[in-house]
Amino acid sequence: MTDWHFLVDRDDYRNTRLVDATPAELDEGEVRLRVDSFGFTANNITYAAAGDMIGYWTFFPPPDVGDDVNWGRVPVWGFADVVESRCDGVSEGERLFGYLPMSTELVIRPEYLSERSLRDGAAHRAGLPAVYNNYERCGADPGYRADLEAEQMLYRPLFFTAFLIDDFLADNDFFGATTIVLASASSKTAFGTAHLLSGRPNLTVVGLTSDGNVEFVRGLGCYDQVVTYGDLAALPPGPAALVDMSGNASVVRAIHEHYGDELVSSAIVGITHWEDRLGSFDPMPGPAQTMFFAPTQIDKRHADWGPGVVESKLGDAWGPFIEQVTGWIAIDHGTGPDAVADVYFEILENRTRPDTAHVLHP
Image (cartoon, rainbow, N blue to C red):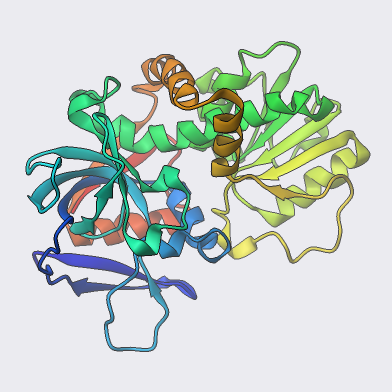
């Protein structure tokens, strides 16, 4: 099968299907991208779990395959090459980085072209957050390095989220907290956030993790303290703010009960524990939980700082981070639809080691 789509049942993530993709003729103004590679992490499971709530399923509608299953395509971050263009200003051979489907190709309708980026103006994406519709033009991106493509796919989108979490907390004076608890501390978003928070004064940054991941998390060197889920009594005193990367309902409840009124903020970032989702609980002690949505903070800072400042500050933070983390995690490369399916189920079932990450080549 040369061209294909990897489909996921939106009502049962364990039900998947690989279908042929028949390239359609381009309309004027459209560009065909050949998906070259993409990273796949627990964050992509969050895209599925929050797909209806936030609209992630909307970015890449599935083809009609003639059955009654509610299929979707999980978004990923990766690199693609322009293989056909009917859009002035976009040339064949150009390489782009951005939001892609788990497919071998994507047709976009570029608009807002600049030297460094362009945006997909397809009608079905018009109401979706611009950050997910933008594509960086690698040839003009000063932060692009061909030798660090794998790290960019795996880390950069998650580090952008980490950057915005750190900024959101600082923007709110950390809600008065002196302790920041990051649950699922081995995740890339968590240790990116910890890396940034470690530079903030008068904060204790705590990584909460499983017994099996303790040594890995300690070895990262960005947490002041590492605590296991079974030893919450070891958590430092409040006032504390919780940033949860997994959506593990039992863990979140236990932290709320441990701190009570000393928990001053509780933000959900990820829903990788999709079978133990939040929302089914009775009310818990402490603050109401909020879903952290990165585009909301982006929009606020664009308004506060003006155009281009968020991106500039992110670039300043990205360089030191990628220099520090390169080599922390072994990167496995897989090729073809079988490899895509294998990695998808490995991540879905939480079988990936914290010191291993996956890059896939359709």
